[in-house]
Each structure stands twice: as C-alpha cells, then as structure tokens.
Image (tube, rainbow, N blue to C red; front, top):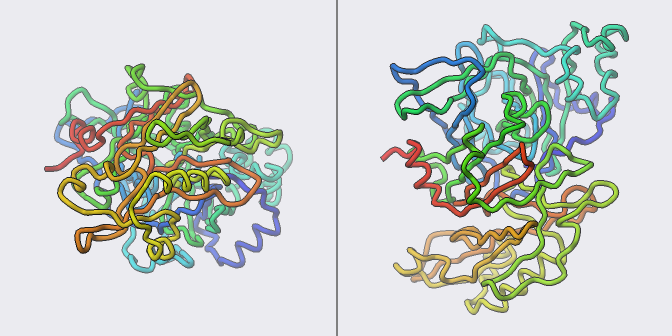
Length: 486
C-alpha cells in the first residue's frame, strides 16, 4: 500500500474531523498512502504469535536480529503487533509502501465507515490504551509529531494547540500532539493521534525452542478512532523516521521476506518468514541485487528500475518507458516495490503491449465473461488435469522482469495466471493478475506488487541501498524456520 502524504489544509482536517465525528479522547491515525486499485478487499484472520517457552528471555534493545511470522490473507500479509502492558495482540498489514504504523483503537468507539469486513467481524481486536499501564500520548515536542504534520508548516498544529513559539523552537512543548488525517489514493481515510507504548518483538535465537523477546519502550504509532474503508491497521516498513525499521534501529541494516503463495492464504498452520537485522542481509551475495532508486518526491519509499519484460525468454516488449527507471524533474516515475499493493501495475501503453504479446502466444479460448466479472483483462479457459495441477505454469509462457544492473527475475509458477474458481468439466479459468496504472501523471510509473513476489526471497539491503531477488520455495523456508505446523 504505497503511502504518499497529501498536503492537508487546516480546513480539510477540520472537515474530516466533523464528518467522521471522531472521539477526541481517542487517537485517530492515517498513514499517507496511495492504494493502487488492489482489486480485492481487505480481510481479517486471527494471527497467533510464537509462544514463549520456559526458556524465554527478555532482552534489552541490543538484540541485533528479529523474526516475525507473516500470515497470508487474500490481499496481503499480516503481522502481529504485541503492544502495551500487559500485551495486546493486534494484527495489521506489513506494508513496505508507508512509514506510519497504526492500529484501530477503542472497543466500542472505533468507527469504520463503508468497511464490509469490519461489519462482518465485530470481534476484530482493537487496541485499548486505557488497558495499558505503559500507554502515553505523544507530545508536540516530539520529532514524530513534527513528522506526522510535515505536509503543513509543522509547527502550526501545535501552535493552535496552545504551544508557545519558545517551547516549539526548543521542542519542549508539553501539550499533546494534535490529531491528524491521512488519505489513501484509493479513497480510504484514517484519523487519529500519535501514541507511544511498549512493543515486543521476537529475536532470533541460536536454538529454535528458545524464544528471545525484545522490548521496545515508547514505540510511536497511530491510535485510530475513525476510518473510511480501512478496517485493519498497518505496520509501516518504509525508510521514514516513524517506520518499524527506523524505530527499531535497523535503517542501516535491512530486512527480508519470503511471501507464501496464495494457496496458503488463511492457513493457520504456516506463516511467511519476515527477518529483520544483520542476518537478513548477511551471506546474500548469491542473490541478484538491483539498486534502490531515490525519489526526490517520496524519499522514504523503495523504488527500483525496470528495463525490460520478456516472454518465454524470446519475445521482448519494446517501447519500455524511461519513466520506469528514472524520475522526472518533479520526482515522478520509477517502479515502486510495495507489499501493500496486491498486483503489479504497469503504465500504458506498456500494459496493453504485454497483453497483446501474451495473447499472441496463448492458444486457449478467452474467458470473456470472467474478464467482465473480475475486471482482469486476460482470462483463459485451460485444461485441468493431474499434470496441469502439479505443473500449472506449463500452460502459459514465462514472464521475466529485467531490472537495472542486469538483474533478471523469472516470475515463479502461479505468479502471473491464477485460477478464478473451482474447476468444472475438466477445465478451469485462469486470469493474468496484472493491472494497468491509473491514468495519472504523478507518483510512481509502476508498482511491483506482493502477488508477483510470492515464492521469491526479497532482501532490502538498506545499508548498501539495494534490493535482492531469489526464487525460493517459501513454504520450505517457513518449515526450516519453525513456522510450519504439521
């Protein structure tokens, strides 16, 4: 879910506050983000966290590495946040396209407008600040408060809250950081306040049965009282000061993930590994690394450069736009890599050229009715047999993405065409899960989404500012790290 902070005027904040009628005693929050037509709605599932054994240890903040399980759902990957004293477990999306971490707050007072999943699951957990003895409201003197209001003159909101110029300049104003509102490009809105509380994460131990717990005091996050179309929180893994890697001291190190395929979505017995720290980037020289591109407009997001796309290692798409590997004078362009966007998005006419090239080499009948029903643009009726079940992508040509520095990634099986339903009469309908970018002239030129990152180890080397790729059986990787219950 790419997060791009929109400039909000005071009148807009006021209008949003009145419109949503959020409770001033609770926080409301929003990670600035452009949700690029996910195509699927958010879902919720209970996410168990590793249980501490009798040998469990609490370690101070010098623990160098951590590993958290990610549970796949139908439009992303959820991570458990262990917040407060005593701990409250809240499941949120792991999002490399934003910085701010936020959770729904208030058992009865949390309001989610136009949220089907929320209405269908009233027992969805929310965070209760009053139930935590370590909960604090962030203050105007905090750098995080200045950061969250940075789209405006950063001292204006605290001036309105009653801070004097002297205390603002000295960053000593004791007044609570004012409420704020963020909007998503897809139309979602969240409103809230900044809170601080103890976050507990799981360190990596030399023995599998020994769970090491690391406590992060005064972790800063958004406590959300009201949202529009956003029922589930977010853990921001961008490069800004509010992000999880930044607050945990990993901005000069890195993290990696290996997303399980869609077939494991909502499976409570297996989780994707998310590794943070030195171990995530050490001994990774066998991976292909492409440089991170630094956007002057969105410096906290992760961008890479796409040079070419080939089909079956033979047919190459011509007329690749330069905007997919460089930025214009205003900072627009580049290919955003984003775990919070489900499908890869390509700009026109590149997207249409890809469809035409694929259609020219695929002989199966089109499933026009399914294309209309799902809004995917290329669907086929394909045979369904034991052999096609075990080797599903033998039916379709391979797709290879070529990134800067001669990095080539052949999309693993199941990462382009996917079954839209159960087989019938020995056939099944499969659709290409790519989408066209919105017809806008700002922001990224394309997005590399989480669906196309399945069964790929993706390494974010933040120290060397590069991103590595390696096809991998993520289920086997999960089993080797104790994340597969048999």
